[in-house]
Length: 414
Image (tube, rainbow, N blue to C red; front, side, top):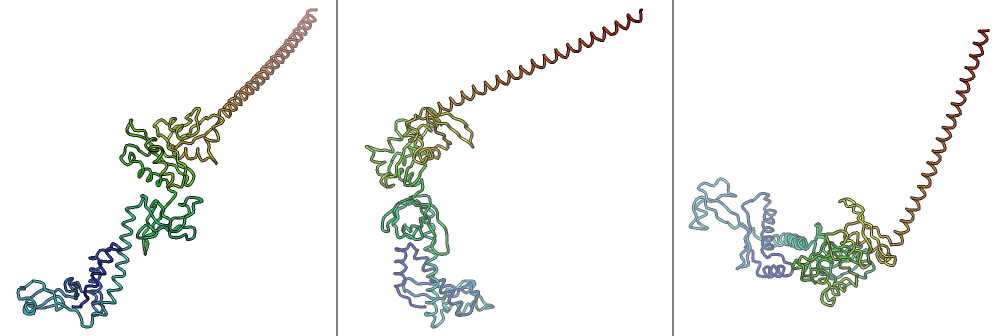
């Protein structure tokens, strides 16, 4: 047996506390390393009956060979005679198994080098698996981290046991990420690599808004108020559609909170990003009207209502057109994402001009049609005149022929 003392156990306990690596895993790794070192030292490739045993009380470890007790030994590597076995244990019988220590002399240094390599690798593997399992469970949830640094436009965020990467496309535009600041991020994806797992986080994902509302609004967490849809342009504006399953609970009021306390907390967390809370409705017309807010709506016409193309025409007062569309089309774009409807916004004046244009075009088409009809009538009259003239000429020719026949008949009579 090799004396290793209690320092190993103290180190295992410390690793278990700091990195969450089980003490049993480390001890099993040490035993596996001892067996691997023994096989290499003894030039043995296959030795299924070889194992290492660690005595935690004495702090000793050794390599043992398990052999079967037989009357006649045919394979000395796996069998032992009854007489030899009774020297080790007087109570053994035929077909029993006994463990015989086979630890080589001067084996401590060889075992230590092998154990170091194996344990180091096992610690890395265990740490990687722990991190992978932990963040696979956190995938799709909100977590808090500390900004470490910015590398190649990627923000490195420490989220506990590992550093996560926030790509540029997942960052809020014009946001300054200062190292050392705490930040709430959304765990977007977890990728397994040869080293530590790569965790991808986002600061611009719409689900961040959902998580914040669930944290701040008890009615949402209890299931009384339901978030139906979210559309977000991070750093600028968010629209969120909510619905109450209890008629006595106002979904919008619950999200705003007493004197706006709940929504103010969320807006502060999002660095003063504007948030429109919209009341969801199963009626598409009412839902679109709510989604276009804060602009007032005169009318909503459903143009097409199939699953592939949902088109709606929204008419607003002239002074509300810019508000309904929003800066660079932001308001109508967010309303489209929120409702799933393609929304065309026009003012009352634009609709009146289009109507006048349609009427004018209709009158113009009528005039053209009348002229065409008159032209057709004129052609018909001309054709009738020509037919009459032709008939008259035909009749005159017939009269002339009749006159000539009468003249010839009179001449014959004479």
